[in-house]
Amino acid sequence: MTEPARARAAVPLLHRPVTVHAWEDIVFAHWRHDPGSLAGLVPRGTRPDVVDGSAWAGLSAYVFRETRVPPFPPSGRLGTMTEVTIEVLTVDDRGRRGVAYRTVDTANVPAIVAAHALLGVPYTFAHARARRRGDTLAYRSVRHPARPGRHPVRWVRGRTGRPGGTVQPRHDASFRVVAGDVVDSPLATELTTRAGIHARLLAQTLFWQREHPPLTIRSARLERLEGDLPDAVGMPGLLDREPDSLLVVDGTTVRYGWGDVVR
Image (cartoon, rainbow, N blue to C red; front, side, top):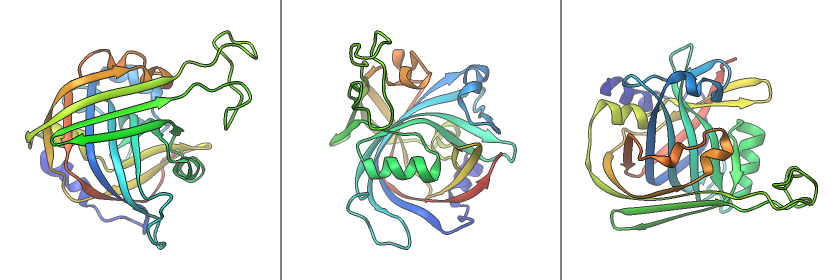
């Protein structure tokens, strides 16, 4: 299984790249699930991908640097950002193994606007931060409460459900891991090397192709994991137990390009 999974990343983009990013300090935490429990959380025309006998939901985080939108040069406003995601591993009827994001939390407003309008990827504003000291990587993402009348997209009810009620509780995720030795298992490769993104844009499910060099994957030791961010995206309790797979990936360059309409 390892070699076919690695080959996904080397498939040339069918179209010119839409975005190019340098990924750094990449963390992947994944939990096993019954496929039926995740089926309602993925875009139409896809289903949860069963790997090693289970469907998988994940928490991932990384730092984007040197972001480019070809043919334009690197943009200072899009250049560097931290992203924290909740995701489900997916596969479509053509066998393309991808990922469906339930949320991508970041503080980069231009990226949020562009992703929603053009890609269908559910970016959400949050104060997302990363820190690395040696082999220790730490991430924290906090969605601040939205007060009635101040939400950037829509009015939000308070906790009482009435206008002017208490502010909506914030959602957050915080975790710290220590990177270990290089691993080369089929499962690690399957969980980290995906062919692209399955996303919902208006009435259609789209596939955005992803290309990057073969990844250097490392084991990781968990030091802290807490937060209720999954509650905000229909996956309550995801962080209540230690992940079934915890990996750190060395930096790489990722290119995204248009795939096609899934349905």
